[in-house]
Image (cartoon, rainbow, N blue to C red; front, side, top):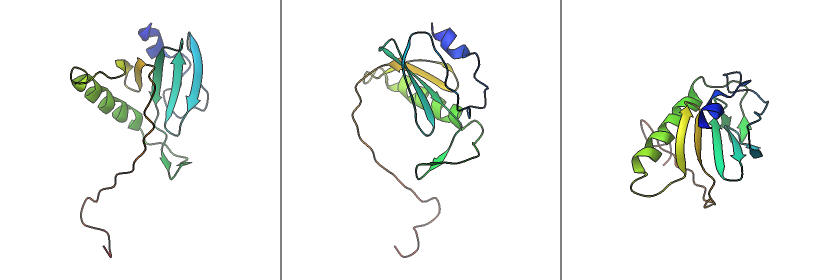
Length: 124
C-alpha cells in the first residue's frame, strides 16, 4: 500500500502544484501553506511536504528547491530515533517528501521560536 502512495502518479515533482492527488481510500484532504495532508480510510495520514514557502501566512511565489525533502527527512529521522522512547504517529517515509503515519488526535499548541545567528537585535 505504501509503495503506491509513494509513486503518486500525476504529481509533477516540483511540489508547487495546486492540484491535489487522488489516493486510494482517501477520505479527507487539507492544504496548508507548505504541506498537503491526506487522510486514508480515516486511519492514516499522508503528509506531502512541499517546496512552497510562506512568510507571515502569505504564500510566496517562488519555492525553495528541495525544502520539502529536507524538512520531511529531518522529521522522519527524529520520529524514527525517538519511537522507542515515546510512541509517535510515524509509520514510514516512502518518498523524500512524504511521511505516513497513524491518524491521531493532535494537541493544538503553537509557538514561535526565534534565534539570532550573529548578535542580538538592535536596541535590545
